[in-house]
Length: 530
Image 1 (cartoon, helix red, strand yellow):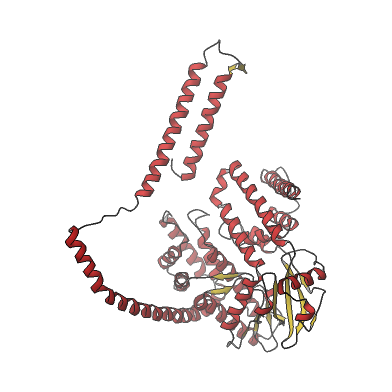
Image 2 (cartoon, rainbow, N blue to C red):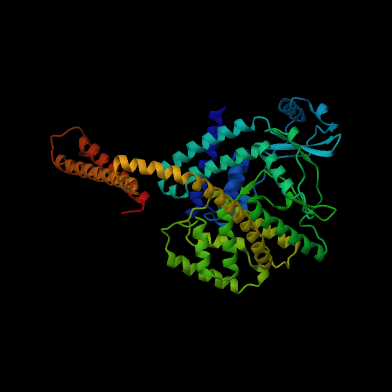
């Protein structure tokens, strides 16, 4: 079974690679774009590849816009699995059959996806609920596909070493970790509970609660809630109020909570009858640590105030651009970005677009995006699109700048207060330890005399550099010796056997010399030094 799957996946991927090469060489006129063909190919390969494509859609920093659009549109075109299997999984996971857990349970699913499907049910004390059940065997399928993908990537890196710059193994590892989290319904239940508690007192935001006692890694039971889609028509006044509430909720998530719902597309957002915004599907959640929040607040303020130096500093603080970057060229690109924004009306400004343009200034070089910032950038795009669907005239720049500064300052003040508390505690501990520590130091000095310790930093890197240099020097000497040996053996006419008129021994030594030379050049090119 695994062998057939490997053959099918390999054939599909290499067929696409050959088709793409013919298109690039203009030997073939395609009926669809390479981005669309890749999207259809991933959909045909099933869950793992759909989720991989969705993970790749986060890489706005390296992929063209048409690929991003095609990969973001990936859908799980799967048929539901039999309701009897869902009943069996609920019974196995929760220890009781659905008829004992629920007042009633609809065996027919209301919706299906590649990871799981949803059933309607009713609890005696809480009314309507939804029951998510993970697809049977999906964990084994994902594990098998990930092994196949790792083999494929190793082969690609051997055939095309220049693609190492994209760090495909790391991208695959991130995609696998994200898919594992999405398949773990207990992880999603914890996220739902965290957001539910955080927004319990917000009249404009509703998070359907989760029933943790009825949830496991393969089953999730949540309050049933819905409403109108966020992109439905509504009065302008209502749209403006919803847009303000939505922006406030996300600023709170970004700068106070440090967790954010990372998939706010219209399918996961509803407007309830009471006018509140209801969030669904917490399978994809992003995280921002305190430093990232602080630097993102700096980025927003720098863009508002049109300060290129401040923008560059904020981007470097976020750890996105490396120390090797050409600062002068990057600074010129920032000036052009700010000049372009200065010509736009305020309602058309986009923090997400500015964030992306800064990432693309280096054309994929000297830039490294942590997973949390990739999710943040994607979420910003979706947030801005949702805000404009709620209120096309909403002044997003002013809303984010004014509210963002207030929310960030509040969060940082809380952080500072916590820091002062720890500072006081640590100071008291230090004052208590000083007499004892000083006594021990005086005793050591009396016994051994005054000792000074010197620590070297950076010697390990120097040692590694010297090792690489010596290895390359050895390879160069080996290649030169083989070339010289080939040249000396070539004139010997009595040297047999021969291949194409050349002594076979010379063919072997020359081939080995060329192979050593190639290895040497590849190693030098990877290090970026000639």
